[in-house]
Image (cartoon, rainbow over all chains, first blue to last red; front, side):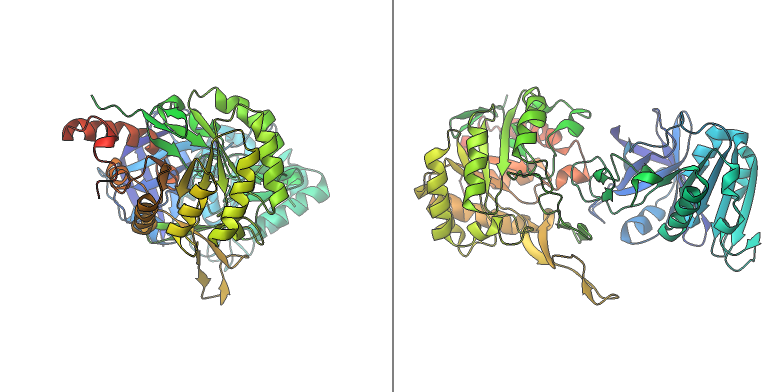
Length: 240
Length: 300
């Protein structure tokens, strides 16, 4: 992990309130890790934790939703402008554990860290993406995954309803999920019923992103853990 | 070339820039980013005699140029600190300060007994944590109560003792004087300012504890005034903190009379900032023709 002032290569809207930002960065990044992003002005105080959507040799890409002041400000930045990047942070997915046939299940902006994961898993990954009504970056998953299934709550694109209803969990050696907690809870329970191991990537309010402020704690069966340092990926059995 | 070496409380500091308790863990995570021997010192995460899990609910809330926290002294306890964290901290080759909080007199006594026989260089006595009910800050509001606890602890403490004051004290000058008269070797201020936030959609306080501690650049003018007030009233060294973001901020605290400073919330905003401030401070002094900080200390 390191702190760098990085130049933005691209920052564009891909859907309503959803942006994709690519910035210069060189260094090894594991799928599931995240960075703390901050503009160089003082328009907001704390850096924002944003997960890695994709990474190349000399760049890193973030897919994010504008939630408040910080992400709105970041979304207004243009190519050529500089921002502060701190990372990569967090444990990321344990690729050694993800062997065999893997179901990757994402909901809404929770799909962000799953693209880079899918890229590394390749055809062994079946990807299930759930959205409310707007669908984004699906074609990128299609490039790498074994198959991609889309569901929208209103059925306007893909299957109708919750994406979790379309996953046959018992078919897989492991399941990876990121998205709304209600969706992840359902997946964790389904996996438990059929005895498939499951990994969930959590989102928490953070200040430091590196394990010192203790603001992002998660109470687990193995004690209080930090989402930023011990996570953001947790084995589902650990979660209460 | 500017000389940043600072002697205070019987300790030689390489420079006056320390990192504040609760914003730097025990240093380990930061040691992966920069060489911690460049710092004047490190204050440990606030310790209590026994391990604490901290507060429930939301723990962080950003405000315009500020951060409200309700961590609640989550820490591994004094014994785990001594056995697991302190040996690593000592390897960073800088002054190591144990920040000790408590719920009652006995907690402080026992904590100090344990720290007395360790390699800790200095104890920072936390009588000012706003996030723990019925404790901590109770000792930091009335100067007579602070005098009582500090004088008792000073009798058994074999390490230099720096008392961390709360901005929520009834009177900062009386509090500073009380600590000096009780035998404190130094004081540090300010801890976070008690504050609150309300979620108007839920019509509820954001924090389970309702009130929580405010820090960051928005508190700096208040911190500076309190440090100035303390410095005018005591002779013991004062360690200033509250919203420091730059070497220029450090200079302000030194001009207000501080001997040492601590970098807190800024560590979250840019993890390398404490080391950068140290370097910038030296560059600033060279530019301004200041050889040692004594030339400008307390000139306001």
